[in-house]
Image (cartoon, rainbow, N blue to C red; front, side, top):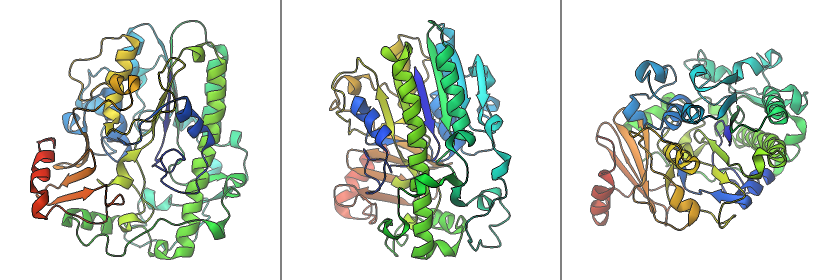
Length: 429
């Protein structure tokens, strides 16, 4: 099995249509060979809780994990992770790059581990390329110091993600006949958006399309969310179209950069003995905002923060290229992969297998996708609605049939009371 993670990649891929100009031929090709879950959502729109929940099969509310500073092992020391489950069944498990959160690489899960920190390039440290006026109250955090973007004079192979790819290719070239679980984690599209010039050249600056925004987009959201967005604001410069266009271009370049690396990895995988029958799984840990809801980062309960690519492909998969449009969660991966491999997974997993949708893309799902935001605040996506309930009791409801960008909160309309009540049953207590 090839298990590929891409950091901070939202729905800006050709198959998901999140941006009209994005070029992702290799991700699109993978979707054509397998199953794309077009309405896949993370369990939390932040790296550590999302990755920890996917890899343990336990929701953030089950783990009690909502931040980037807590190791899931401190909460569930005996949890059997997904790669551990495969290792127990005789698979060779190899983890390369960012699979678990960077701060907590989980050596227990891997027989061989090459964490992303070992691939970092110190030449990119303190390399300011973008003149943003950072607010003084925000400038003392590491995240804001790293909100930077621009082309760098290095080849793909010289950057950290290029080194992750090289290690993965080396593992594939030397792999024996034993079953293999190969995890490969790329750090782009995480900030800073530093990638080679040729990827920026794919997107001429003057023609880059900006997301369609509404200045009143926060007027009908909950006060907790509105306060959060304001406190997380990076720079007023990003309100200026000429600066926003440069940032959007850099993100698009980063997407195409990682797409190219994925293409080289897939080519080697399909050509290897493991690729002839093996499964490819590709996912991102959460989305990313580019000015929607006046936000330029992640960690939100809305579509931009939670919708992610999820692709599964194998030569034996029926109906290749036909997408599944049912709402699904990254939590569903653990039981799915264990079932496909005939392994005995832990009984307390919070997700539900996607085997029915792999066999028949239109097969209905019994449960919606649930996303945690912060303690006491969560979202549910089912059919064509997103419901959000905050810790203070404020509710948002968006009808994706009429409002795919989630601009208008219709929770207060009398005709929607029953729908709010129905979806609220799935929110964590």
